[in-house]
Amino acid sequence: MTELAATRASLQETMSFLGAIASGIEEAIGESANGISYLAGKRLGMKLSEKVEKTDDLLQALESVRRVLQENSCLWHFEPFQMHDRPEMIELTESGEEVNLVFRDCMIRQSLFRFGHQQKGSLCNMMFGFFAGALLNIMGRDSVLEIRHAGENACYKRLLIQKAGTKEVA
Image (tube, rainbow, N blue to C red; front, side):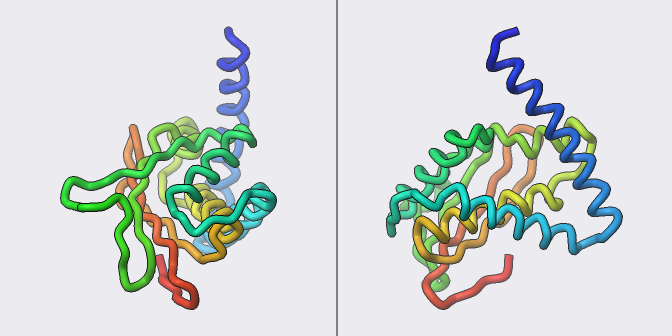
């Protein structure tokens, strides 16, 4: 087994354990588990992105988030995705800037499948929090990451970078 394969296998075992914890906490405290996980992810995102260069460019900010994840051995591979009916990758809305993201190799999705737990729960909310914290540091604005589709091979999400002073509920 290569070093990368061994590292990934070790990570999968750890993530299975995390899947068990998420399942237990969701059962024990219900919906509050989502908020707790979101805040934990947000703190982590802010901590890991403290020294990242600031930018107003959304695609550059996403590249910085990708780099932060890679530097910290997090296997959350994502890419911006342009729908066929959208003229631009980034759409300007009344609330802010919106971009679609595809997550093809997500350690959380793999962990949930390995443990046999459903998607869209507290671990997914931890990812939303991570993005919110990192993008708050990098762009200085709040964001919302919303699942549009959670699948076996990939997840499709909408990321909204909010205009200063606006709030949107996911």
